[in-house]
Amino acid sequence: MTDSQFTPRVFSGIQPSGCLTLGNYLGAIKRFVQMQEEEYETIYCMVDLHAITAKLLDPATLRKNTRELAAGFIASGISPEKSILINQSQVPEHAQLAWIFNCIARMGWMQRMTQFKDKAGKNAEASSLGLFAYPALMAADILIYHATHVPVGDDQKQHLELTRDIATKFNQEYDVDFFPITEPVIEGAATRVMSLRDGSKKMSKSDASDASRINMTDDADTIAKKIRKAKTDPDALPSEAKGLDDRPEARNLVNIYAELAEITVDQVLADHGGAQFGAFKPALAELAVTKLAPISSEMARLMDDPAEIDRILAHGAEQAREITEPVLKKTYEIVGLVGA
Ligand code: TRP
Image (cartoon, rainbow, N blue to C red):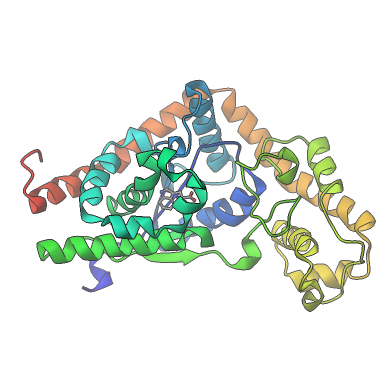
C-alpha cells in the first residue's frame, strides 16, 4: 500500500477528564497549533467517550470539562476555520467503527496494553469493559478519518501500534487497502512536562495533588505559588544541559522555561546558570504568568458564552461527518453489514 493514496491528515485527542494543564498545552496543544499551519488537514477532538472509561464522572462536570477543553483548544490558537474541532460523542461514527474494531482486535493484543494494566491496577476484575476496549475506540477515532499522522505523548505509543495492527488485520481479512497505516508523531522528551512534586511522573490532570500541576485556569498568584513550592534540589542551576542529568526536578523547571520562552535549554542555562532556585523560580513564575494569562483570560471569556462553544462544536461535527459517514458506510459494505 502506498501512503500517498491517503490525504495527509492529522488527528489527535485529549480527554475532558479534568482541567487542562500546562503539560497538555506545552506537550500537545502547542504542537497541534503548529501542525494546523503545515501541509495537513487537522482534526482535534475532545474524547468524552474515553473520559468515562476509568470512572464515571458527574454529568455536569463532564459537560463543563468538555466545554472547558474546547475553550482551551480555541484560546491556545486552534482555529475552527483551519482545523475541524469536535467532541467525540457528537460524531457517532467513532463509536460505530469501534464496535467493528472490537471484533478485529484480539483479546491477547488488548491484554498486553500497559496503560490498561496501570489504570486497572490490582483490581482489573472490577474495571470497566470500556477501559479494556479503550484502545479499540482510539483506533476508531483515528481510522474513521483515515488519518495518516497522530501527534501523541510517549505513553500512547503502544496504542498507536495497536491502531496499526488493527488496520493491517482489517485490510488483510477483507483483502482491501482501505485503512492507512498511521504514523505516530511522538513528542520529544524535552516537551514532556513532569509533575511539580515528582520529577519522574508526568504532569497530569488526574493527579490527586493540585500542587503537582499548573492548570490553564489558575490565576497569577496560584501559578506563582505552585512554582515557588515546586520540588527542587538544593544546588544552583548548572551552566550546561549535561549538568541536569540525574536532577529530574531541576530539568523539568528548566524545560518548562525553555518551552514557554521558545528557546533552547542551553540558552536558558546560559542566562541562569549559577542561579539558585530562589532566583530562578520567580523568573519562571513571571514568564509562565505572562504566557498563560492571555490564554486563561480568553478561556474565561469563552466559558462565559457556552452557546458559542456549542455552536463551534456543532459546526465541527457537521464538517467531521462529511468524512466519517462515507468511511463508515464503506466499512459496513466491506464487512457485509447491511446497515450502511
Ligand atoms: N488516549 C489518548 C490520551 O489519553 C487520548 C486519545 C483518544 C487519542 N483517542 C485518540 C489521542 C486518538 C490520539 C488519537 O492521551
